[in-house]
Image 1 (cartoon, rainbow, N blue to C red):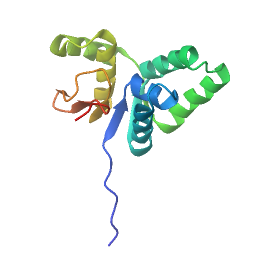
Image 2 (tube, helix red, strand yellow):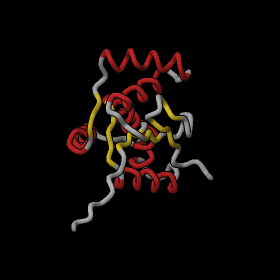
Image 3 (cartoon, helix red, strand yellow):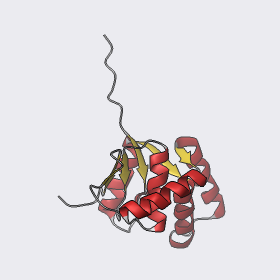
Length: 144
């Protein structure tokens, strides 16, 4: 009888997790943790997060346009990408009313819900909050 490996839940990574993985030196412990999450999870993300990652890498890490194009291609090759659309925007509005998320955070949460994600890793959202009995927000850097 063949044993199958347990499937990891689908995860969504907020911009800050990607940035810790890509920009060395901010915080080495957080950088290692972010890289571990990326290597060990089944990931989906959104066009919004890709935008935010790119603008920050241009400014903070002085990425070249060529390096940025390779990164964008890598996102699309490796991960599920949620496109922002009417459904995402309308759900984000409902989430802002129900949970008092910021405009940008509500789009992240809405995008994750669109892909039936179970875990949203974010450093700056409501750690431990379960949204719509489906999506748990986890701050992977929170000290226990």
